[in-house]
Length: 145
Image 1 (cartoon, helix red, strand yellow):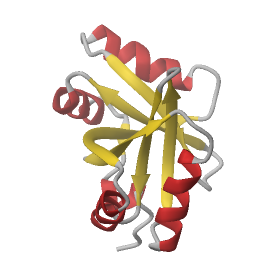
Image 2 (cartoon, one colour):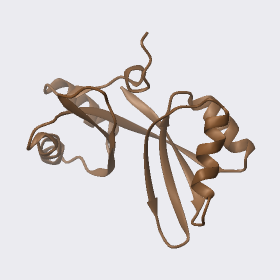
Image 3 (spheres, helix red, strand yellow):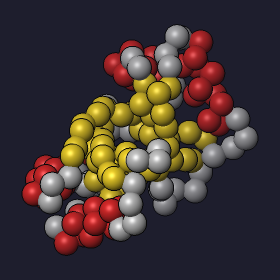
């Protein structure tokens, strides 16, 4: 139930982000979700893409520095307090959210949040066994199979 996220380390300069998106576009890799955090010197672009292996290959060929991380996609009710219900639950079980970002979906009745937990396996087990919907990687990546 964990998804693989790529982290691309970027110099904080004009055009560097566009180099990543152009490289992926030319390779036919679809970006499904992303988050960008920066400091004055560098940024970390976190990506979930439809073809991890191809993305890793083409980005490395273009001299980008990459990391891989396991993240969890959780379906959150699109109502006031929907996100709070997940955050309160994991907090009560001693699980820290290291970071999170939203995932775009065409479904109108829910939101999808991508979480990086400090105790990923424990978070997945607890969320699933307590009625939260954790999306499998294939569904997150848009695979219909």
